[in-house]
Length: 632
Image (cartoon, rainbow, N blue to C red; front, side):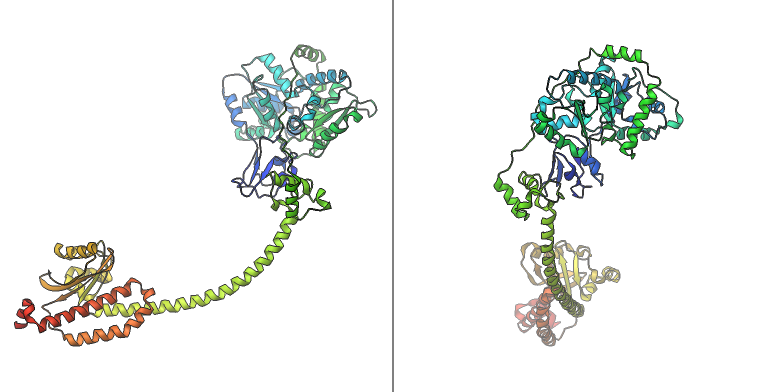
């Protein structure tokens, strides 16, 4: 058994209905809820109550298909409760034919095994000599005693269940070569088959649900089929077995309240209590216990029919009566005598899964936490899935449950959470107002930034010198009209499509020596001031400077053959622009980022360049090129 945690909503219905509490709940675990299979008795209660289809049991469908696909004869072993499950099939002979259509060579009833087991029980009870027994037909009952009430192990009847008895008969009749597939209402039968893996070969165990799925997959319907009868031998009253007191009817045991030697018990709720009562009071009761976990096998968890328990029971009785009309007592007796030689005995082993009880201190710790450490701790509402608050606290101490499973604990925490949420909402409202104010301020700052960007961009474009900014791959990040003009007609055409040539590769427009100047500044981090270069047939003086270490470089180009610019006026105007805009640039510097820094650096570079030229003009001896230019 396992739980699909993607489907599970942690409603704890499975915990509430698990008779042995073999389900662990832990939010800190990788699996928030988990079936502990070493403690699970495979009763299927969790599977039946889950409304979200989150609980699954091990499927043997693939095993069955593999067996049916082989060349070895395959036998279907059908539980007697089939009459109550497949009531939608009008005649049992059509059902048998449907099984043969799947691929079964022989279709055999468990009912004959019931007859043999009933005979064994009759002998056991008649020779009990004061000892009282518990029937071992239900695998859930057997597992529960082995794991959680091992003191009752000696009282378990040492007789195999009817379907295992039928497998023994089949193996005697057909040998070990044939494939045997049991089909019934019980999930626990899958686990029961493992008990006999060294003694008997059972190839697959299918529930009625799984069989219906195979019918649907293959499109097999009774309306298209002829009659076919079960293979012999035919049972006498073995078909009554799925009704809880059916075994007593078959073995001829009196159910008279005065003379009866047996008490029958069935159902999820009474099953654990009945075993406890038997253990405590059997010396006073002095009767055998015929017990089923379900309300008879007609109500097993592997069934799918929506009929009520009593309608199913009436269907089983009606089917048995019908079979009596063609019952051949002589052939039946021959089969009884033949199969009486088979060994139907079995034994059981202690598999104690009980946990040591936590200390009272640990129990009280949880009781205090959930606020139940009082006279009512032995009661409780049961919403957590445990009988009372003490049992729940024990489960918490054992790591099988969490305090949050307690309804009242959650209610108190929810009230506290509501108060905290209310305060948090007030704080969030205040924060929202602050955020709105910050949003307005951010919008205002954004507009200022955009305006400042327009100003700096305009200034850049109107500068008389050519200005460019490139990245480490010499891709153009920004340039002005002056640069585009000196790069030539190709650059002008491209600029019509790509403003300012942003993103263009500078290497396509300049020669290799000039490229090396940019690469030198990028790699070395050293600036180059007033270097004369040849570009497109003209002589320019250029200054290159690093803007971002090994990432971004800026450059300024000036054509030395251009008409003389009134340098004093340019210096005065640039200085004025810098003074007026420096304060604004600093205020919005965090918004402009590298753009503002680039602009300021370029403007200062231009200023320094002009000042340098002025000095060169006043000292012509220091610059032969300028002397020639001035003379010219």
